[in-house]
Length: 176
Image 1 (tube, rainbow, N blue to C red):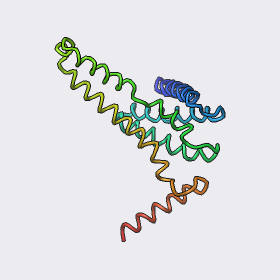
Image 2 (cartoon, rainbow, N blue to C red):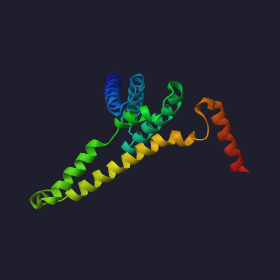
Image 3 (tube, rainbow, N blue to C red):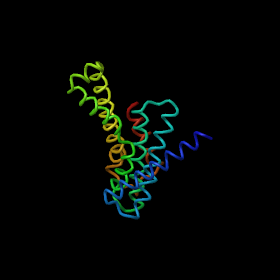
Image 4 (cartoon, helix red, strand yellow):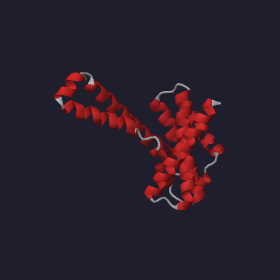
C-alpha cells in the first residue's frame, strides 16, 4: 500500500511540475492536461524502475523514451507538435540536484580552506558532473527516439501490426 501511495504521490508531483513548466513555455491551455499526464507517466515509469532496482540512467532513459513515443502518437490526436508537451514532461526528470552539487563542489575547490577540509571534493564534483551530463544526454536521446523511429511516416499511418511487420521483414533480410 505504501508503494502505491508513493507512486501516486510521484505522479501528482510530476503532473504539477509538467503543467507549470507548460504554462511557462506557453503551451496552449488545452494541451496542459496532456503535458501533465505525459510528464506524470514518464516520471512514474522512472520511479517504479528505480524501486525495482534499475539504475538511475537506465530508468531515466525508459521514462524519456515513453514520453517521446507517447508524444508522437498524442501529437496527431491533438494536432500539435510533440515538443509542446514532451518538453514540459521531461523537465520533471532534469537532474537539478546533481548539477547543484557539481557547482557547489566547484565553488569549494576555489577556496583553499574548504579544499583542505574536503580532500575528495574534486572526485565528488567529477562524479556529479558526469551523472548530470549522462542524465541530460539520456533525456535528449529518449525524447528523440520516437521522432527518429517515425520520421518518414505519418503517425496517422502507424499501427502496431505495420511496425511488427516491418521489424520482422528487417530480421528476415538480415538472416539471408
